[in-house]
Amino acid sequence: SNGNVTATPDGDDLQYLVPVQIGTPPQTLHLDFDTGSSDLWVFSSETDPSSSKGHSLYNPSTSTSSKKVDGASWNITYGDQSSSSGDVYTDVVTVGSLTVNSQAVESAQQVSAQFAQGNNDGLVGLAFSSINTVKPTPQKTWFDNIASTLDAPLFVADLRHETPGSYIFGAIPSAASNILYAPVDNSKGFWQFSTSSDTGGEFDAIADTGTTLILASDALVKSYYQKVQGAHLDALQGGYVFGCNTTLPDFKFAVGEGEITVPGSLINYAPAGNNECFGGIQPSGGLPFAIFGDIALKAAHVVFDSGKTQVGWAQK
Ligand SMILES: CC[C@H](C)[C@H](NC(=O)[C@H](C)NC(=O)[C@@H](CCSC)NC[C@@H](N)Cc1ccccc1)C(=O)O
Image 1 (cartoon, rainbow, N blue to C red):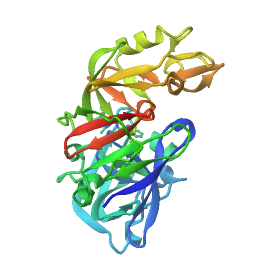
Image 2: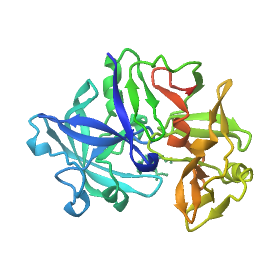
Image 3: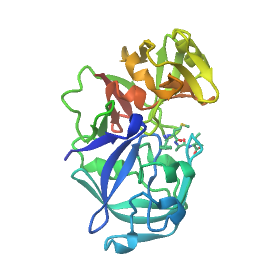
């Protein structure tokens, strides 16, 4: 089987939300599919009420198929220092037409302010199950649970600028042509691959649908903005800004034997005040790899192939 589901960007393409059905009868929540983490967690009837306003909530007690995982808990922290934690149920989880009958659904009891004020109802982790945070027994991702029923053990991200795109499970859409593949090193649990660019030399990167921007080394970022008239690092805005009608250079990076181009237009991320705009490439703050978030992913169809432990990029 295979399936696909619509991924709808919220304002400024900050994140891409996907409708997911949980429980019996189905409860629909809008979740952030995140190839940079491996926990499926949701706002729920157990979430601190001061944090859950404005979110759809999973209520395990009204689902006839929910089961409490006794003694299990989870606690996750993300690169932007946001976090969430809680306890664990199993329940039916359907994405598009694909159903996992006993998926670990991590119910949030605490969420940090970024999540309370954000507009997702939780995350679906699509990185490798090795970094799932449930204790004492780590749980499998929804993709790991569904993979064996798919025509191929892979999924494809087709994210777009300010318009709905999709995630396709089990097949590669015919629109994806001339796919460039790179082997994935999943030892840290991420979709990590080696790449290079004329501004950054050779480096590793992770493909992270749950991160909005491209986050890279200080050297790469400095070298990129040296080509942008008037660009400067503005501590108040939290990164590099430039005049909003500045023409930005493309960002090209290597994948296998070929090269992917992120058009400069995608790198003018969003207005930042006083007629300056915030760049879509920003410093990662010293991580040992770059994070190729949605700014990069929008430029391609991206194949996350767990069968062959490889990632494929097809230029759009
Ligand atoms: C360094 C980052 C932390 C601390 C590290 N955690 C991670 O790497 C987690 C799994 N992944 C993440 O924090 C990042 C990848 C960072 S690479 C180190 N991806 C997921 C993130 N975009 C999810 C998100 C979505 C919407 C709003 C906020 C956050 C850890 O637990 O050690």
